[in-house]
Every structure is written in C-alpha cells, then in structure tokens.
Image (cartoon, rainbow, N blue to C red; front, side, top):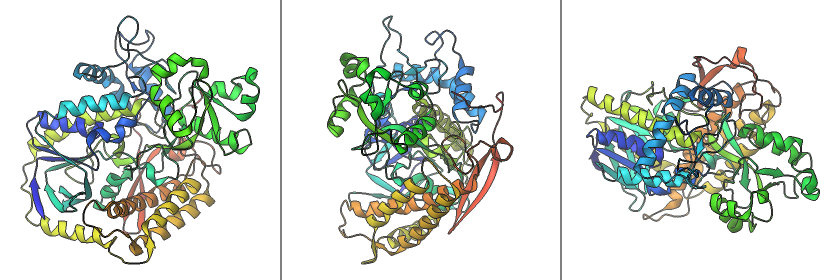
Length: 566
C-alpha cells in the first residue's frame, strides 16, 4: 500500500472542497484533493438557479443583510442556527464580488451591474445568476483558480474510510478507481466536502455520485450527524430523467384541469406557490396529484410559455435543452412534465460555524456534507451555492489555524489500521453468491421514497426503518458479478451501497423519533410544529447496529420562532 503525506486532505472537488483547498494552499500548506470524478464534473455544476447575495449598491434599496438572515431563518422553519445565518448573509456580497473578480461572468442589468432575481422565500430579489448554468460557471472559475496552487488532484479516486489515531483523524484510505490500488493519505487535517446523498431515493435530481459517502465515513469513524431527518424534495424535476427544472416568478405549475381551461390560469393555489419554499410547494403538488388534478402518469406541467421564446432560450437555455432532450418537450410551446424529487440534504456532519467537528480532532466539513446549521429544516433556493463558498472559505481558514497550532507527528501504526479498514471494505464484495447488490440498492431507494419521503407517519417510518435494518444485514451477503481489477465500477457501486445503508438507517430512526412537522420533515400524524418539545437539533451516532439519538439547542440570536406563512 502506497503512503502519501500531506498537510491536509480534502475529500470532494466541488465548490466547498475547492474553496477550502484554496484557503489552505494559499497559506503555504500541501493539499490533496480526492474526488470520485474530475472536479468540474462535481455535482456543484448542476446548480442552475443562482447564488443569493446582498451586495451594497447592487440590491433592492429596501433590502439588507438582516432581511436575508430573517428569510433564511424563516425558510428553515426556525431550526437554523442564527449566528450561521448572519455570517452567511454578511459574507454573501463579498463572496459574489470575489467570484466575479476571479472571472465568473454573471448576467447583467442594462446599466452593467450584476443582474438579480427573486427565488422562493426571499423578501426581496437577491439571486445572482449566469443564465441557468450558475453552478457550472462558478465551479470552472474556482477550479482554474485552485489549479495554480500547491494542490495535488487525485481524480477518479474512491475514499474508503477515515483513518484514526485514537480520537484524532490522521488520514484517509483511498483507492484509485482505474488500477484498484489502495493508498494511505496521511494528514493532520481532513475536510469532508463530499456533497449529498440523493441516490438513497428512487427519484432525485442528484448525480449518480451522490451516495452519502462522507456522512457514512464520519459515522463509522465515530462522528455525529446533525439533523439527519431533514431531506429536501424539489417540486419541479423532469419526470423522464430526473433533472432539476426551473422555478421562478411566473414559472407556473399547470395541472390537467387548468391546461384544459387556459383562461383560468394560474389558479388560487398556484399563485401562492410561484415563490413558496420548496417543502411547501412539493407537498402541495403531491396533494394535487393524489386528488386527481395531475396528468395521467402522476405528474404536473410547469408552464413557461408566457415568458416568451427569446427569454426562455437565452435565460433558461439549460432547462429548455433538458426538456427537449429528456422529455421531448418544447418549453416555448408547452408545459414541461415535472414532479417532486429528492434534491438536497439539510442534515450532515455536525460542525460549528468554523467547520470544526467536535467529536474527532482534525475532522472538518463544508458544503452539503456538513450541517452548520445554516439551512435548518428547509434550504432556500440559491443559498446552497452561497453556503459552499462562504463556509468552504471559513473551513479552509480554520484548517490553516489548526495546522499552525497542531504539530503532532503521525503515528506509525496507521498502516495496520488502514489494512484493517481495507479488509472490511473487501468483505462487502468478496461473496460469490447471495443477493446482487443492485437488487438491494433498488429496494432501498424505493423504501426510502415510499416510507421516509415527502409525507411521513409512524407506521410508514417504522416499516421503513425495519426494512432498512433488514437490508443492512443483507449487505454482508451481497455479491458483484464483475471480478475485474481495472475500473471495476460494480465494486465501487457496492461500496457506495454500504455508505447508503449506514446513512439510511440513521435518517429513518431520526425521522421516527421527531414527532412534529417542521420544514421538509412533514408527519401526517403530527402535522404541527412543536417548538416546546422540538426546537432542538438532532444529534445521531451510529454504534454498530444501533442509532443513538441526542440533542443540542438551536442558536437563537435576534429572531424568535413565529408562524411560517407565505
């Protein structure tokens, strides 16, 4: 097994990982970035809508950082740590100006200033955008910037587990996907920036690489996840290939009966939902479908035709092309077929606003892999790109300070620990018979969608948890058919399934325990928010086959919980 020595290892080549790597490398430290894909193919590139920011002199004259913080806190149904939301708002304008200075070509207003538009849950328009390819533009800009620093990229490498020296993270065990050869990356600090977990669900807007790897590695190492029950569903995803569609002012969901009577547009419900937060819009669309007001095939239509052909093709080019390619629909002439799908994970590795995990020394996290918590129970649109950059930078700066003050030598016993972890990984794929991993994976994704999805209740959650626990024991009996030792994608898919299982059991248990409805966690048997008993963060540990649940208080600074009305 090769051994590589770095000051810091960053897992993930998306916006959060690259921004963290930028800060660490800019301070003169050697950084390794390990990514399952080439960095510009990271899921950050799929973020279409924009990045929220209050920019002094280029915002609505009535807007200010306090309004932005309030919108974020309210949007998260008051489970947001308000110091984190304030930091996000205060740093937002600076981050956008930095990215513009580094080369991101934002859309412009007629006077030359960066353009802005409304997104769901915003009191004033503050979303900056590059057509509908904002994430892609930001990612290319940042990758180019980081490529000139002392950063070594290990692209198409699979991180298996964190390597510990007692209660200190001392490195990462990873494997090159081409050669299937493992390597031990020794480092004083590890940043988890591994993105989301959408592949746990049968319908998701996420890329195939989003299998919850960072969450599972943290859990197996003994770190907690914060608020794991909070899973966001986007209201408008294409039905034939789950792909994020566009939702903005005037992007109206068209139900079958409304399509037939065009003069009745958009309908009372739909007016309210044009810019409602995603959790509310997703539940409302599912209700309409269940009550028979959807199209045959259980979907609705997202109408953009009134925006005009030139606007759609210029400002919404990616959405237009995707609708044409995946659904065969010309969005300038007819509604796009959409339905809700899993989109984002508000839960994540428990960290504070510096990106530091309190369970394991040397462990940090940023972006969707982390739970700061800046999104609470529901993330507002265009806050995710902002979070990756703001807290990616904060985390990178924290790592720099950590490296300056921690000079412990790395234990020579790490090789034995790495060998043990490698053997555990191989044990999941060495069977010659049993249950094919694909069968277990497909069942897991359907169970999570049916039982731990948009609408939840005790019976569903108990059934889902029981099924997940049963499947988690079957993982030890699974096999892969491909035995090759070069780019064996089945091998890595099976290891991803191990990660998905570890995360699924934590999500299911935490969702069962939280007996209230808050943000994206909606229980039909407990339909009201319960601030008296549940205004607190869930803290979940995975101890073998047991999920241990604890709690910590929500940080309140200036905004007390009130009714969440839009």
